[in-house]
Length: 506
Ligand code: MN
View 1 (cartoon, helix red, strand yellow):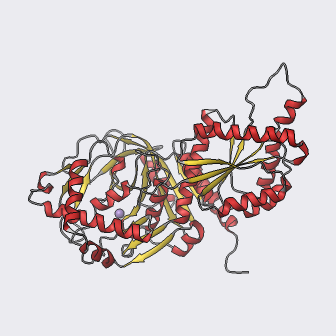
View 2 (cartoon, helix red, strand yellow):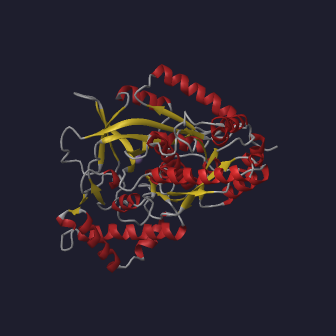
View 3 (spheres, protein in one colour):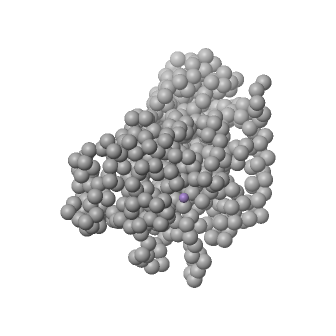
């Protein structure tokens, strides 16, 4: 989606049946399943290709097809549909080897019953109502993680649900294969940005890799002045650049240095195959500015980022960027300060510099201001306000024995006034169900102060992502009460400890 690199990812569509129907009926089964794929593809709003696979009739074919899906690096998920009855013991060996997200589409090629002409030929050809229930029984018994979507493939509701799942599958693929570069360690003494990187790789696939910040310093030194100048010209075309920073302005050199940081970071990330990174203002080595503008530009291109060495939020941002539609807003964010009234209670979110312009309302302005932390030269940054709309903030935390996602439904709103003295990008929102309940519930759930804010990725897609990751998701929304929330946390803790089983060797 908004990824700088837009790979051709696929979702396989596998239709189940069995040989006893005979060649003539099975030819109709194949034709109807091709039609379902065409109809489903028409409504799918995610950048994946839906690939029709030959109808599977035997346990061997099923196992081979699902094994091939697992081994295909471009396949991000599998949709299955039992067009006719496909005895589910045939699927046991296949499910054992399937390690891709599974969507069980409970559908039927025929939309309306032909009441006056229906006969047994029709009944034989439209059996998913019981065929899919047979598969679902086995999937539940075998504890296969899956999403079930029910309805005709031309239904907009079905298309929307499959789209949410496909977006999550793209996110999960990104998280599973993510390589993340940390420039410096995490901020000293901070708990929530720390965590078990080996555990994260075991549970979520991401590889978190440490680089001395001087590798970035060296790369900045190698950037040619002419290349940086050319990039500042691009800034002047795309953004509202403060006059002092423009070519000929008193402080243009600071913008050139900011452009060098962007070119150097982009080079290191591309050369290393990284999809996400972190910085830490406590560990800037020979960098003259804290990277601000460069980080904002890279986030806009789909890279994950976390401040203060926060690799979990960076990985989550890269994941949710892969789930974001072109033009959609998804950014690194931090709960910064509160408005406790008068009027609705609100959160003002921002960071020292690093908020993604994909959430901006209007054209960002590039400015330069002092930064009272870090002790370096004044950094260049984009300044803007987040555009209003419904959304959510999501975090990923390490509880020691497992990882937990926390999501809070929010509404981004216009600030009460124009904030003329605030020199950083920001967003103002009202959290559901209200600030007091939201903040209490968030803190009870161990949620972090760093989040990913999105006005594009639906909650349903976040829910699918957590299920694909076999991880806990705590949702705070308009229906949250603290009593129910505490009960959910207790149930979640019990379930996820049981589900994780034992570790340590056998
Ligand atoms: Mn921070």
